[in-house]
Image (cartoon, rainbow, N blue to C red; front, top):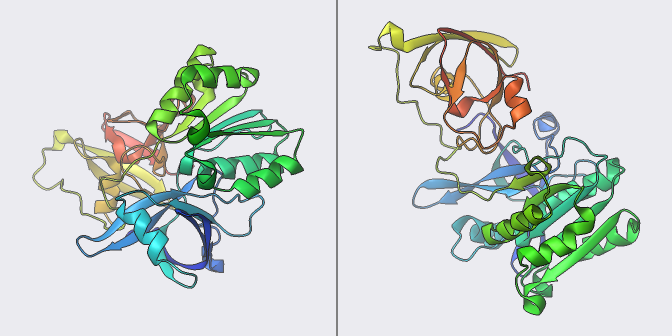
Amino acid sequence: MNARAHRLKVREVISETADAVSLIFDIPTDLTRRFAYAPGQYLTLRVPSEHTGSVARCYSLSSSPHCDERPTVTVKRTPGGYGSNWLCDSVSGGDILTVLEPAGNFVPRVWDRDLLLCAAGSGITPVISILKSALAIGRGNIALFYANRDRESIIFANRLQQLARGYPRRLTVTHWLESERGLPSARVFALWARPYRRHDVYVCGPAGFASSVEQGLGQLRIPGGAVHKENYRSLTDNPFEVKQAMATVRGTAAADVATVRVDIDGETHTLPWPRSEKLLDVLLNHGIDAPYVCRESACATCVCTVKQGRTRMLMNESLIEDELARGLTLACQTLPESDDLHIAFDQ
């Protein structure tokens, strides 16, 4: 079992719509620090399965650490989706779920900037966390564009109405209902978003919606660096089931092995690093409790700093240019290029 997996009690289950529920978790005192989270992050839940033992599913935190007492994830039922249907149908207050510590980088770095938030369906879950947090600790104005199938499918409808009334000068909420107006086109979105074209943009929703929004933003010539997108994805690996790395140093030619010094959790480890083996696999294979969730470069949980030596990443969906320039890398995708390296998990 992943060392960052913990058993948490579900304090309460709230029905948000006919096909969406919120799960509110109690966090034991000794896990308070581990479950400190940033607005826009998510939790990974273990869902039991008769066929595979378990499956892992990621759900965004809809609560805000700045104005909500307990972490909460919101789950919308997906047709044919095993995890979402099990959580919506089977979980009650008092149940115990196995949960990984918070992860994800769909998080504003500056809270005083104006924000344009775009969501569709359950994409509202990380967006409302950002929205509530920006109102609580920021000073900027916020415009929310929220698309849904119909009025009954709007998640957090009452809460959004309360927030709009409470912050009339800072918050603008626009609901777009497919049942009344069809799907939002790029042109229509661009016309709506024109007054907010200097805002930082955060987008979360299905691929078709996100594509229309991005095309609309392109028509407004909004630079890509101002647009932040949260992608839905299914994990190909189960982070609750730790697998031993396949590569071993034994029998590997010396020229194919680097040496790495790793600073993590207040300790320093010096390890052989086969050049074809990702850093995360090396650490896990040596029994070192390195942080990770997706192992696919998307969540940024395994971010670390290259202090000495050269490395390369096979894939990168999380780090931006200035972070790469500061030497940040993702352990789950990193291979060595130098003979001697120094890596620190200091983020």
